[in-house]
Length: 317
Image 1: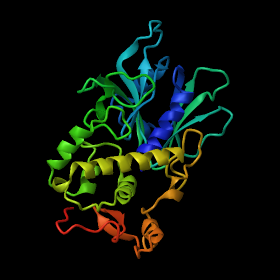
Image 2: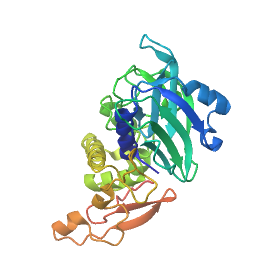
Image 3: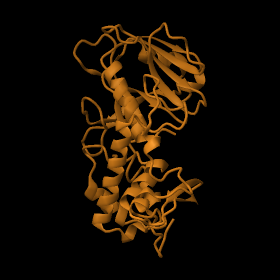
Image 4: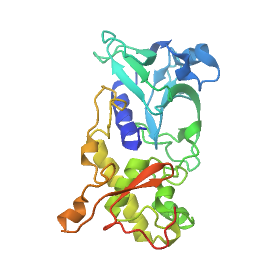
């Protein structure tokens, strides 16, 4: 499933190609991809046609496009409405020229107003149909800050994302509040990092990579975390996601691509995830015999180096 860097790559691409353009027509090819829009196809199309995309916003792995009312000339957004995109396991948002043949798993097509030779279609492609599009309400943010990372910060957030915490790349991320809540818990560190109510956007791959960079084991009890340890893991998570962004995200197959259909290549730079049985790069550089180990964790896998990430005696899962 795409994680924060992959969704941020998509957000930046959409902001470049779609922001400020009007939806001229909508074609729902497979209604299953708008099943989360309870009022059905006609209402979905009616909300979009004639509306202008004013921004592209992300919080954690949630992505939404605020809309301006059709025919509005005062710059006011359609009150509390946005197009929500849930990528699921294989959802792709692609900007294409009409001349480009339809993708095999094309589900929804939005035609956009002409803008200086930019591609005229936004296509939602989804092989496994776990993702989808729907119209959602925007609500005030609890802390009064911007709803997420976007081009125009506004104190509104998509209702479905209002329960999740800010992510480490968000300028409004509050480390002190994060540390207090982390320290108050009695659980393992990786389980806490995967809790979107505590900190959003960190998935399984980047949790393992951040823990390796911070030299912390995934079963480290959170109530034993010192402030400097918590700061180290947050900084490591921030660094690994920024490095991934610079590489266009992590792609293991053709299911994750950016808006131009290109794959990311950060998978080539992973230090621990997926490297079971291979030498730890940090330990090898120091002449130590660290070999990456894979363990079962929450119906997933965790990858660690037992030498530079020793398991704590009071481990918690």
